[in-house]
Image (cartoon, rainbow, N blue to C red):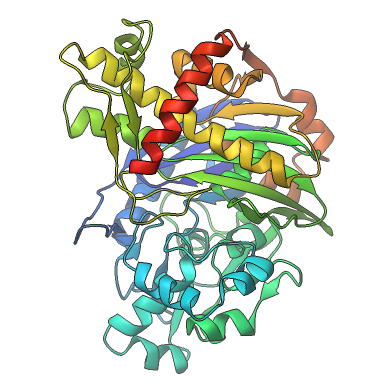
Length: 492
């Protein structure tokens, strides 16, 4: 019987389930969206029950469409929206509140208070992160302080905290395992990059009891087995987990220092492999654990742009100037440039390297001659220009120059965006045959743990490029775009 690996990619707007066979071919891929909840300005939540329903629905549809027998599944890998924070009852698993999503900015004041206490450098050196509402720690403290009785229940051991990977492993195992992997743990503000364990000091500063934290495991091992999951037999190993961006780095076979990838999804995330030691950033990007496989730990520098594909969604849903996301490329191609229009997509603040939660989106340079096409092109340029800032920041921090630049995610299918990115970076970009590398990465991690594939060299051997983009923009046009962008960001 052919072996298969099942990957659950639980993202910000939906869940994708992908099934990969032992020849590393994608035999099924199904996505189901779920509702976004906006209780107040700057707040973003998800209903954990809706997350789980999207997982169950995607599982059933993927197995059905592939015609794969459930008992051929050798292992399950999980990748997830990372900093999104959940709190649930240890007995029975009932969530005590909606999940607080990584985009949520409600803890800006708490982060500011920690900075005013002079703790920024402590968190940067130990956790590799900046004090920003993006990360899980202050979200968890908010839940403990604002959900009636939560802090007292946590002290009694009645509650579990987890990022989405932990919650899904809990649900898939019937409550048998409360664990996370090192990559997700490194996104919480509570984890020490050097000891690879929770930090009592950091937990104390934020006000989080260590008792509610999950156990920290590697990214590729058997955590538990399935139990009581509709459509799946009991006993399938749950065997791989990594945060979505680290999983994409793994799925792109970026195994050597200097290998880099950029994922264009709801946000855009640039990661560069820095090898077996953490590199402290002085330029506003983050230090993170890439993965742990066996005894080997790899680290990465990461730059995060909070809004990428979400800017296209805003053009579709907010301004209604396009009917579907793929239309933006065709519309933007109708004009040779943006006509001087600059769009800074700071719709939920600015991420790296600025870390300004007070920033707001900005469109400048509009004239009487500005058309929908100019705005569409300015949107694509704004996404690409954010990545240029991240790459420049990383170049000043990393020991290794970028040796490769691979792209993935839904928006990587947009040829015009990829060409603009290559032009502005002045680098070749390589797009793989499979751009859903986030799900592919978690499948690889689970397959390594269950013996479906022998080692990483087998993965590298099957990685294939679909297209390479080379710089074509002249220097004067590039310099003008960068100058306009820098001026607009200062006003955002």
